[in-house]
Amino acid sequence: MRSICQLLIVGLVSVTVAAAGGLAAERPVRLSGSVQNLLVGAKISGNLESFNKGLRGAADHMVYNPQQAEFVQPSEWHEYGVGYGQNLGVVPQERPAWWMAEWSEPVQANWISLTGAYPNQRQPDTAWKIEIRRNGQWTTHASGVAGWYDSGQYAWGGPDTEPVTLDALRVSVFSKDESTPLKSIHFRGEPGRSWIVARLTHDNVVMPAPFQARITPLTAPVMAGQPVAFDGSGSTIAAGEFTWDFGDGSTAEGKRVEHRFQQPGIRQVALTVSDGKHRHTVLAIVRVHTPETLHVPQVHLDTDQKNEQDDQHYFGYALFSELDVLGVNSVHHGGGQELVNYREILHVLDLAQRSGLPEHRVPLIFRGADVRLSPPASGNWYDTEPEVSDASDAILAAARGASPTNPVWVVPVGPGTNVASAILQARAEGLELKDRLRVIWLGGSNNAIIREFNGNNDPWSMVVIAHSGLETWIVPAPVGARVAMDKRKEGHLYADNPLGQYLKQIMPDRNKALYDASALSAIISMRLDLGWIKQVEQVDVAGPDHDYAWTRSEDPAAVRVIREIDQRAMQQDLFGTMKGNPTRLIGVAER
View 1 (cartoon, helix red, strand yellow):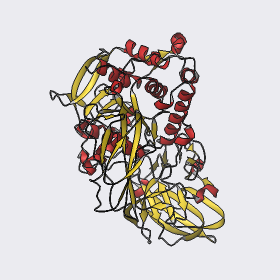
View 2 (cartoon, rainbow, N blue to C red):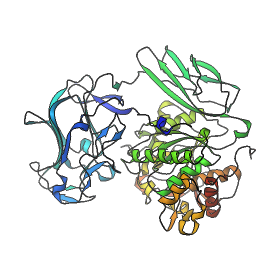
View 3 (tube, one colour):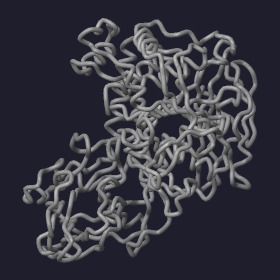
View 4 (tube, rainbow, N blue to C red):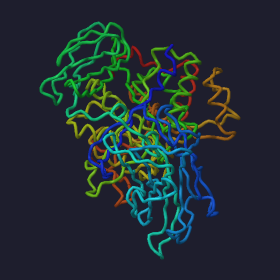
């Protein structure tokens, strides 16, 4: 059995290295898990409590330890702020709101990274100042209005920056003038990306390669025992070393290689290209088939797993179904919760393994975006800056390994940030996703992306998806809510195993909607023509200028909104599957 611990791999974190003078240079790099965050050993304090306007979190809740891949204090939101929406009035610079770290002995640092406010609590008129102290003397390191504090990131330094010596760091916010009040002020932490003070060296900073490895997408299903050609000639390097790892213990060298997978299953194929100084790796997720699995729907899950109880049911349903689960992504649910959701994925997977999930059904797990996308100034979806993560890369890997005869369903049941980012990355790469990926999203209200939790938490991402040209389906939350469970009356439906007991335990003592499961049931129904989808409407999806509404469309390629479902059949399949009686998909002929 694959250990859950093997999945807890410390990821690399995208940041921006600043030039020696402290001004950010356009050189995106990654910090490794070897970075020592000096804040971990500091005394952390703040004065937000003194405003008597409520309190969110604590001063040390944003501090992240890259070496342990976790925050130093458990917290759902990893923030420190006054109460949501609270107005502090005018706060003068002489008496600011502040956060501070102090060391008992001076430290040397050439890296400081901080994250500002959540995107739903913008701070365009808030002034800020970053100060460092040495021998009792405070000096201003940086200051301004809005900037990074207005839902952005502050990053100073890099491995080539001369270290500064300090024994304290203070971050203050205050009114920009005598008439501007402060409202809803807070600081937030992002895993590995912010609230890090460190002495960086080239050993723990990974500089980007000046080229990219590329795998040409496959054109046909991969069959066990049969040769498959892999092509890396599209890589943007004239000459170099091309190393392939096929995920089954086999490797090969060369731009173009041939391989036979002897056993069926899901494999992560990696191509690493090196020029002797730099390396770049690209992935493809490949389903190795037998004739019986050729037409089984392939799904890539994308979940804010800790948000509500329906997320855990959705994951358990997928694991014990006969769907091919290529991977599972974590994502935020508004900004700042990705790590909590990632850990819950691991927890549910562990329970599933202890409940009899076979080894070959244990999927790959990928960490995703922790912040939402922002509409670009142009208003054009394709100008959006993606939130690149292991999860968005994994979606592209699934697309490269997919056969056009059986595209992969990506199933976001939270914000669509990871999926939209993958679409934007593919566009930049020149990777055609049409006929390789399909999307079905659980979210939105009856007539718009917004006015519902998932949609509100990143509405622009769904605009990107809807306008991308991919086949896209939406199960509005009010429709998905019809699949429900009242454990007071129906508790016997839960499996008598660790996963079933956990799912029953976390459910409230009332009728509770299990929204997310309906998206998976819809895929099963479409594959087998079961009739669980009763009514579908084609729509056009608008952006913020039209309140993210969708309106009826006659275009056959428009987004499809599921309006009516057979909720009873979907509920029965959900709980029957987790009791070991899944709807048969393996060995079913193409319809």
